[in-house]
Every structure is written in structure tokens, then in C-alpha cells.
Image (cartoon, rainbow, N blue to C red; front, side, top):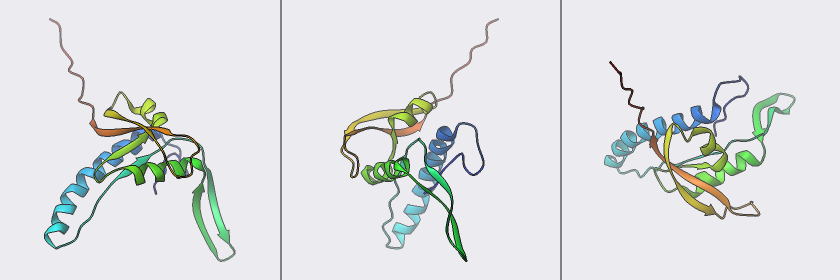
Length: 137
């Protein structure tokens, strides 16, 4: 589980998360091929959600961790569970933040464990191609 914008605020946390997911998927493709040659089956999928969580130090005297809880973490986890190997699945709220920088297609409404109603989800396939700039003379 990775979260962005805490403990250090960052610009465009959803875009950073999706870019990281794309880079990780590319890197894992090479690693999975290497491990398959050795007889191991590995898969990689990602779920990305955007929202509010309760974040901070949790634990007890002598044992503290920094953690997060909330429905947005559950949503990200369930989107990841719904993703087949190699797929990056994002929530509608994430897509609204990154639609200019990615190529994505609708997966429709997904029935996710722990959510009372279906959730709209999208598969991110790639970063969007950079715009072609023309120069007028």
C-alpha cells in the first residue's frame, strides 16, 4: 500500500500515483519474465483511489507505526483485487484528475466487497501521447 500527499504534501497526488503505477507495471514486466524462466509465476495489478483517510501514528508504548485507515484505502484495495494481471484500475474520482495524461477505458460498474453499491472503474492502459506542437512561420 502506497499513499501520496502525506506525511509530506505533494502536487497532483493522483497523477503521481498513476505515473508510478505505470512505471511499476513496466518494470515488473521485465522482472516477471526473468522469474518465469526460473519457474516462478508472479503477477502485478494496481488499484488507485482518491479521497480522505485518517493517517498518523498508531500503536502503543514501545511499538509505533505510521498508518492509514478509511474507505479510500479499502476502495484502492478492492480495485486492485478486481484487476486482472498487468492492469491498473482507477476510481472515477482518480480518472477525473488524470484523464488528460492517460489512456483509459471504462470497466463499467464493479460490485466490490464492502461497498453497498457498484463502483465505476476504469482501466488505465498507458500515458497519453504528448501533444504535437506545431510552429507557424
